Image (cartoon, rainbow, N blue to C red; front, side, top):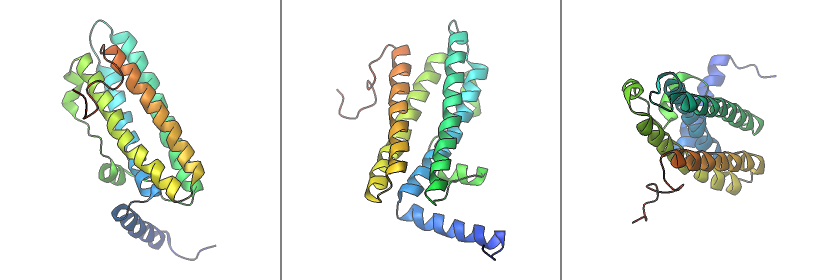
Length: 180
C-alpha cells in the first residue's frame, strides 16, 4: 500500500499525462477518445431534446440510442485504460483539455439535417484518434486495448453509414479528402 497522499499521487498522474500527451501513447490517445465521448454525449443529449421537424420523433429515438452507446463506450474505454494501468480523464477540466470535438449552445436551433451532418463529422473526427490509438496500442503490445478500440471504430463506421443514409449519402461521401 502506498503512503503518498492523494494530492501527491494526483500531481504525479498529471505530470505523467503531460508527458504522454507530448509523446503520444496508446493511453494518451485513448484519453482523447474518452474526452471526445463526453462531448459527443453532451451534444447527443442536446440534439435529443431540441431536434425539430417532421422526423423529430424518429430522430429523438436515434439520438437516444447513440447517447446510450456513447456512455457505454466511454465506460468501457475508461475501464480498459484502468485495467491496462493507464490513466483515463475523469474531470471536466481534463475533458475540456483533451476533447477535440466541440459543442455550442446555438446548435439546438439548427435544422435536423445540419445536426445529422455535424454528428457524421464528429464520428469521422473521432475515428482519426481511434485509428491512431489502435496503431499505438498494437505497437505497445496492448492487444486488449487495441480490441476495444477496433470495436469502437466499427461502431463509429456503422454510425457514420447510418447517419449518412439519413442525408441521402453514401457512407464516405463528403468525408474523404481524395473524393472528387
